Amino acid sequence: MKHLYSALMLLIVLVAPRAMAENYISDELFTYMHSGPGTQYRIIGSVDAGDKITVLSRDRDAGYTQVVDSRGRKGWVKSDYVTTQPGLKERLPAL
Image 1: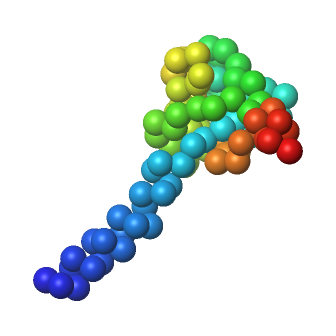
Image 2 (image 1 turned 90 degrees about the vertical axis):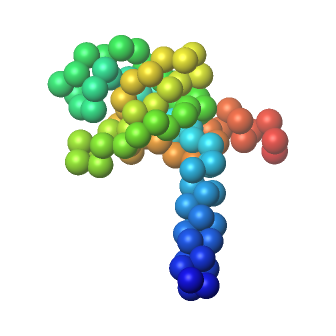
Image 3 (image 1 turned 180 degrees about the horizontal axis):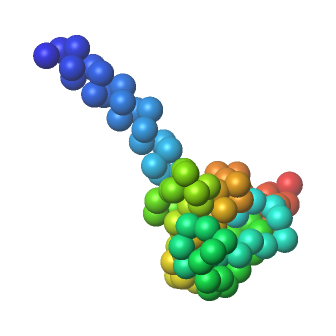
């Protein structure tokens, strides 16, 4: 029982920081937001580089991530453009 408890605590420590990490759109000009996980779905808008987003789910097979952007829109963006590093517009003033 003691080993099970230790394993569970280790799992929580490893997973918790990922779940709480902030996510952003990488420093490209912008990316399109689709209504589903792929380019065959309708474009419902675009998300600017460096915008803070909330990750809802991931479709690893399609390579898309479901997000909510800073304007409250829910859609799918290419997973390549989702990062945990803040964009330049947030990092530059700190320099």
